[in-house]
Image (cartoon, rainbow, N blue to C red; front, top):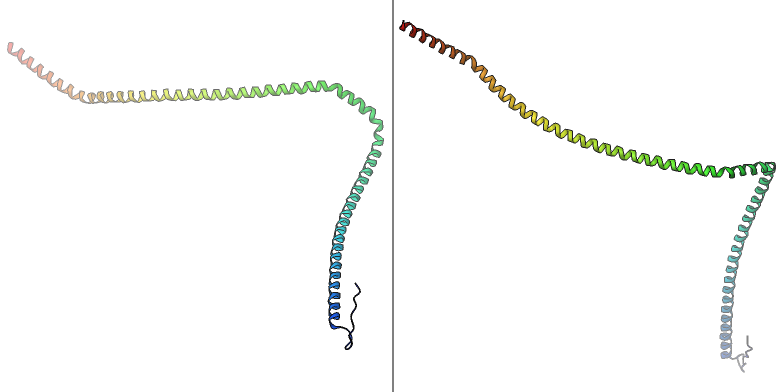
Amino acid sequence: MDNYSIKSVTFGGFDKQDVIQYIERTAKEAAENQKKLLEENDGLREKMAAAEQEISALRMQVEELSAQRDTLQAKLQQEAFARQALEPLKPLEAEVARLSAEADALRPDAEAYAQFRERIGAIECEARKRAADLEAATAVQLQRTLDLFRGQYQVLMDTFESTAAHVNGELRKVEVNLTQLPRAMDQAGAELNQLSAVLERTAGGEN
């Protein structure tokens, strides 16, 4: 704060105007200082918040690194246990190598057998396809034959029904004629009798 002198007056103490100016200037300086302090306080709070966020991020990293460390330690322990478990199997390495060599030697035969199986599978598929095609063709041919037979049968039945109707008609005519035949025979007999009587009379007259 700058030094500021207040003039004194002869009567009544200090100069009133000087006192008012001093108070106003002091208040203004206090307000400015308060504003600066508030700005510094806000800046410090922002820095503190950023520092807290950074600390929180660092804590999370530390926790992640600790978890990774625990996981790696567990894996190392598991690997150590696995190595200890494999110790009794070391004498079997020679047997494993021998079996691997035999497997390598048998691999060409196995591949040839696999190719043979693939060929057999292809042949079976082709045979099944041909059988299915033959079955389908046979079914079509049988259907055609059945349709032809049905057509011929229908024609035959139509012809038979027409012929049967004609024969029945002719048989009815014959039956009618047969029913009329006795009457015709009787009439012919009567006519013959009449003719015989006429002949007898004629013969008697001549005598």
